[in-house]
Image 1 (tube, helix red, strand yellow):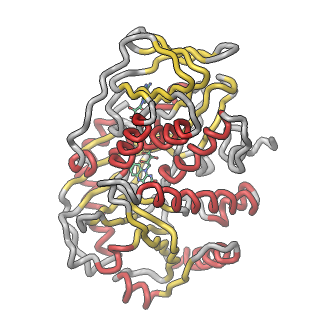
Image 2: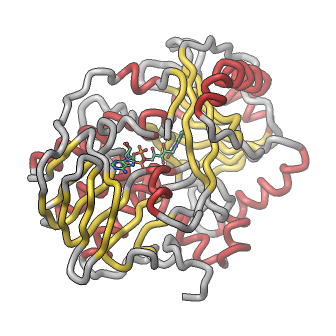
Image 3: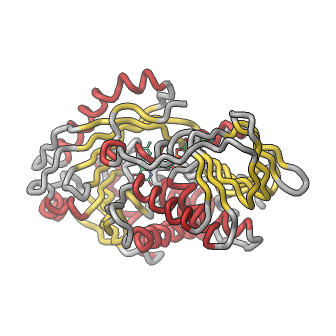
Length: 404
Ligand SMILES: Cc1cc2nc3c(=O)[nH]c(=O)nc-3n(C[C@H](O)[C@H](O)[C@H](O)COP(=O)(O)OP(=O)(O)OC[C@H]3O[C@@H](n4cnc5c(N)ncnc54)[C@H](O)[C@@H]3O)c2cc1C
């Protein structure tokens, strides 16, 4: 599967990377992580800190999967509004998921802040109503979140125009959000894990995962074998290839980055913005004062077709952005697209699947705020391997909604 099209900003920014040679012999370890993107990197950190002997393999280079295509807004707000999530799972679970995401954003900021070059910044997050017929719903969402203790302000159209140059009737301004360079964050985490003994092998592909009574055998594309006590499948959207059940649908998402425009950004320099329409338009800035605009998701799952759409989609994103923010005129410096996957209910999957039993753990951080999910998933998987109950394990499991 080709996960990206065009020129993802982070690949251009972080073109030089240390290469880790492939695994060319049989090997044993406590935990094998399949994948070395941001999800795997966060999991490796947790497992190594818990004293486990960890090995990671990636069929590409570390961070060069979907992580490189990510626009990396870190938000506690799930693609599904709190009120809609509560209708599916009940209010307690909906608040549990939102609260876990809020804590995950805060812990990602704490984790990334001391790291070099990861461009981590705390931000605000503005969610605006896209249409007059969403206004009431967005107001209700704001009240509900406030009722449950989330720190946000309801802004009317005059304030949105004055503070954010934004044309919209109502917006919810949340205090907790962040931005990061996802490739650098993954690399820094992997380097730190390697310093503590983790092994990383690139250009190394897992082809078969076979649990046994006391462990798991993994076969590689080059014929070599790994034997471990646990396997974590953190292979991003390609994790689905290991499951016979379809748990998510693949989509394509598009983005462009502008040239640096320090004078023009105003309050957007400290705020990520998204909207109530689906698919949603969203925007963030970068440490060097560029604007990233993303959205225009579609059901294309054919890389060649997606490659051909990148230019046109970027123009549409620019037009839609300009209609919302008439005072800001970004030029398109680079545009790209990436595969992402959506689950039916908007929540990720972390944990064991009945197809493999308890020693094979899936880390499928699917959804618009995938990186936030990855941080929660890293804790869930660490706790599960250690036999500790995590408060979100059931809600993010394959068995959710089955009364278990
Ligand atoms: C355009 C776009 C914008 C996005 N914006 C945001 C955003 O603003 N905020 C946010 O939180 N999330 C966002 N996401 C989602 C986010 O990027 C993903 O959730 C995240 O990057 C997934 O990371 P991962 O490590 O799970 O997957 P990946 O980065 O894809 O890593 C998985 C790795 O597994 C490797 N692999 C696959 N199969 C095998 C195998 N068989 N053997 C060995 N290795 C294998 C791959 O090579 C890959 O490197 C966005 C995604 C896209 C595409």
